[in-house]
Image (cartoon, rainbow, N blue to C red; front, top):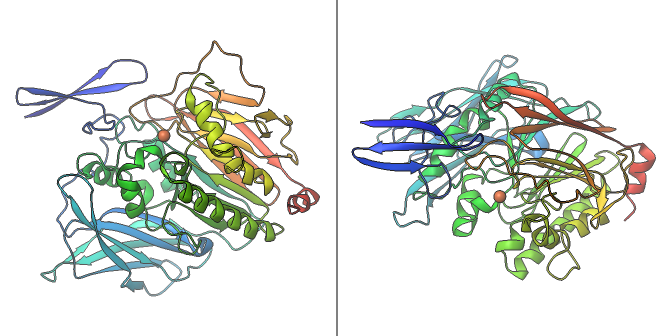
Length: 471
Ligand SMILES: [Fe+2]
């Protein structure tokens, strides 16, 4: 008999005691520990037993700048073929996509846990349309296996109208406090994608990669409805980020001219969104760092050329360039390394300021922080109207087993700090041609939506956008 007992050790940390026979195992849901059942993950059928040929771990992302989508899923056995079927109320017939990419992914652990990854891309979709879709696999005995049906909506074609996306990070399977809200928000179809700033599964590679399977099934109800645009965190670093690269192969890196899912960009209406791998500064060789930065600069050059029609440039990455717990290396030497590189010559901030990036959104620290427009560790202005530099938001407080990072109340706060919030929460961003509105909402400890904790509106005039085109 398996018995789960939940013991509250602190306000923010949940530890479970898993009793297997007479052996008790403490499970935190953190790296190297089992995933237990808690109040945020017990709902739904995510931990069901799948047939080896059943499609599972279904997730979607945008391609072709939001005009088509890719679905990715796993089967534990090889299959003969897979099919994506999608339809809308406006169309008489279903669209059926066959073929796609299929490959075996073997975890780097001792068990060599194997699974088969499948991606299928839609054709061009109609704008402003609610689609339903499912995936079907045919196993080696010619038996078909059909997934649940999921919904997905497309944006309109009017560049000037606004859209919204969710921004979050550091989620986990245990103590994923915000996940119940995310699954509700997915059903609302108010959000066109979710930007996830890394550290998803704590860790995807744990227990011979089976924790990654658990996480992807746990998140399926969210990730199969709201297209995901992610970036890799330090908790995805195992085996040269192989879990991240394989599980998120659907990300639009091929059309972004990068070699794998670690970096890519997408235009979405008036926003150019870039995913940059800050982990390269900690796990990469000097050559890999240079490759990442070279790609970023080329992408920023292209984004600058189209800035009249796509005025906003936002970069998502895992680690912060600025954070206020100054006694923590992440807010000191690690942040500086990402900003300016090892040689103080070329880093992420160097390029973001050269090409006038508007916003940098990250996670890693488990709280919320917003800077004023900042450059070189210096406050430039407290105004967000036609700002002379980017501002940064940390939104790494979705949940996860570690709980919120505690602020250091003894140190003097840096003047570039606009606002900070210690607690669980997530951000939403609304983008129109002239405005970029970021809201941060608290998530209550019972998993319900809490108070609005912060709102910032960045505004730009056409003349300011013209200035931003000058490099
Ligand atoms: Fe992290």
